[in-house]
Length: 203
Image (cartoon, rainbow, N blue to C red; front, side, top):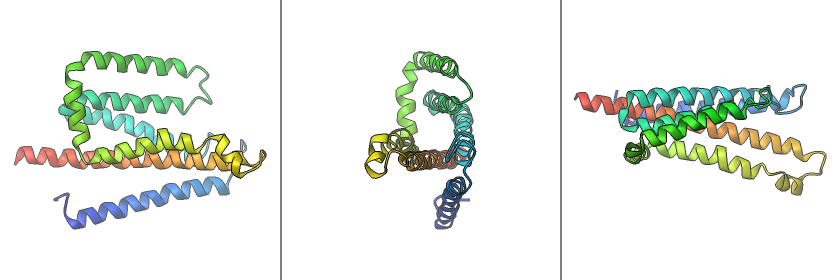
């Protein structure tokens, strides 16, 4: 199958649209069925889906780097970054979550030194792929915009002291899920690019 045909592009649009509908419904479900610890707590579909996607991204980029050696130096770092994000999601049950994060961070620093001469070209190759636009967009939404938009000072302008937390939690967690979902789409697009790359090498 050719990946850039109108039919395959339309198929991806449909699949990604259904995926977006699914995450929107997960957020809606959490609003309609609050848990004992309140709306959008740690044990909700919104949080669980974030954790599943982050772990999937960790595994995906580790495997992608192993298969696609040209981007492996940067893919390894990206993979471990998602592992840090995954661990961070469990700060409500792991009081000492900072220690496993530090271990992963030390591994990242070691990889940077080990692959220092290869990282520049690997980064260029990685971000030259069209899928990197999805990745960068998801990254900005998850780690920058959601934090800025979720500032308590902003929501206090719109709601009183007793009600702003619900709006803040729903918005921030929902935007975070959107961001990681976009980065999952990026992973799918990287897979498509890699398969096409391998086919071109064989032909």
